[in-house]
Image (cartoon, rainbow, N blue to C red; front, side, top):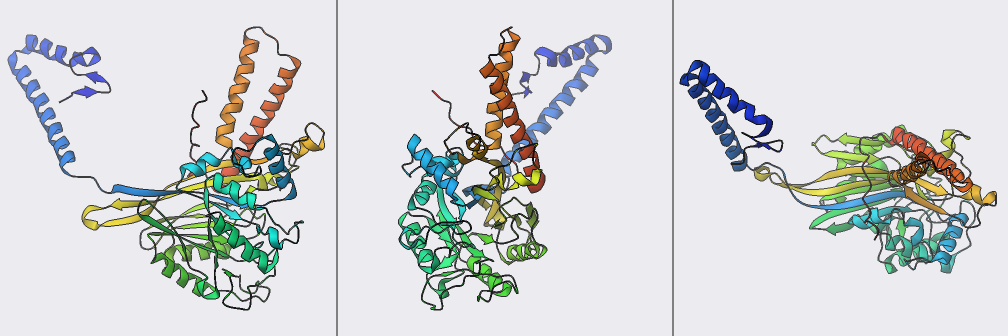
Length: 474
């Protein structure tokens, strides 16, 4: 038995005072006291040994048997400047061979690649054969966007949102074909009207996780009249459907119950809420709770283009569940002119982003059986980098738009400031370029510090987690 406490053995170092005290007591009071002391020590050791044997004999439950992990992010919107950023990345050399699109996710791709499944909301058709062009509030994207997402670790997307019909119903259908060609799963539509509100099943490590996607907005569009053609899962707000038919709440909750029966854990992806609203609609909170009670374990929301709270909810049957009311944007050109400290904080909200993390975990509860539960929930704060102001002032010609991990970038910036300060500590004066760099890095660090605080004030910081570490550079 290794009698070690906090790295020290009994009888050596500071712990040896115990036995020297016993010897002194022997000299003062005779052997009786020593016998009592030794008996006490033996009793403690025997008691500890008995407790250790008990701990070894009784296996603690639950045992984690397997898990499947997910990383989820918000809206991917191919605004024209975003296309320009992809083109610039392609010119610089895109290792993903996706015409620059994969390079736009280079700072965050390792998060998705480490997860079993990465997810985003694809807020655009991909329909080059049926394109009417891209313009404000009407989007289209090249197939290379899908290639870039796939290269970055995205394996499933939501294609149920208010922009899926931007290139008409033929563009909607073509997009689904390109998603299949790229091997990307997509939630939120069916091959026919009868196939709507069916879950997409992701499976890894013996665990099946279903994804049920839907949208509450269609921008005045509607599904085709023919039931044998592809349909989007439309769940309109009462009185806000624009006359288009869709499912009501009772039908959606029944679909959730049926979908849950086909998988071990169910995720609902839903396009809902009010654009740029910092909080969900009260009816959406109520609906989310009903969805969880019906059998879902995660609700992933998108559409507001800003972050909204993350809520932990415990269902009546004792399951711990989570709601990401809005994941915000993930790749867009919104709030491109924002300047920290010069403009109101809310002007930068569309560039506050996050990656949500969670796992489906199979646990063995011994005599109570085996079940799959939600686990390992986390959020990674993200900032949407956009150098439009530098381009407008003529300081650069190369467009940069990309999501970056705040908690990975801030230590890098602080390290550079520390290096510059060390130079001055040795009596070396900073050059003019170094002084300007110090100012630029300081302002960038302040920007990320401020936005991180605002972001977590919105989402809550219960689940914030450290970003994965990158391998050391040779």
